[in-house]
Image (spheres, one colour):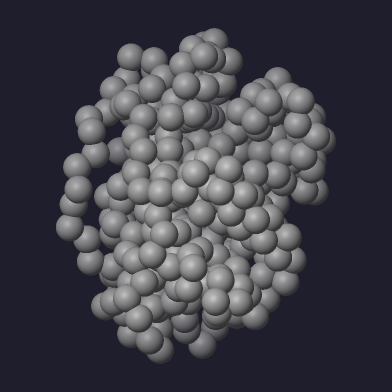
Length: 361
């Protein structure tokens, strides 16, 4: 049994720099400004390889959910909506204690509200096995082809930054003044993710939040005639640049980069809502358009999404926060607005879902 988040961890781990360092401390404690959760430090093995992802059958758990959500929300639950279009903060619910029916209702609620911010989660009962068990309820977990994962648990995608390791600048380039980068996680997969879990392990005193935007409301704000022009179009989502960047840095490419075509406008399988499905991170071109036509339209859509202040919310973090969102109908971006001397550490579990569906109604 691997340790829970709160158990004592004595481990030899490959540091972010790929150098070896022994860390001996209890989770939640700091020693010489070391990480509070060394078990979850990012691990890279350039020899690690994953097989090609095969297409799988999937039934969205939200289709089984009771719309009243009695197994998720109880009389002691406090719900605070962050905006009319996206985002709900929830206290009084322990994700680790939810039944299968409660997890079904969580899938439905994430689809309806796009983003859920769970507060005061008790990490002592939610070690890596239970975290993975919960995420698998929503679909097979994507194993990231290039990012750092947790040694022995390749299902985790690790987000880590400390005074010596700035993954955002390394990934995006040091010549960029604005490090905001809107994306939907691994949208290049044939079956991109749906209900996604983000466990905050360590957070700066101030800053380091995540911006989330509703792709549903972004679509709704377009004129009916423009919406008609977009429906039926497809765009290429690509992992090629991500893989090439990892190779150049001496990092792993655990499986060859893929590219897939997805509808520019997709329909949520449970709520039936229509949403834009483009993002700066992975959408490269519109199928059938000349390059300049594609670039012009995508640039407009990217700007339309990123400037939609009234359908964008800022998810703030504090100890015990777990964020859940539906990748099919949202985009998000980290905000690198905190001092370089402070650490930010989180892990993500990313269940894959159905092949994106074109609009049918």
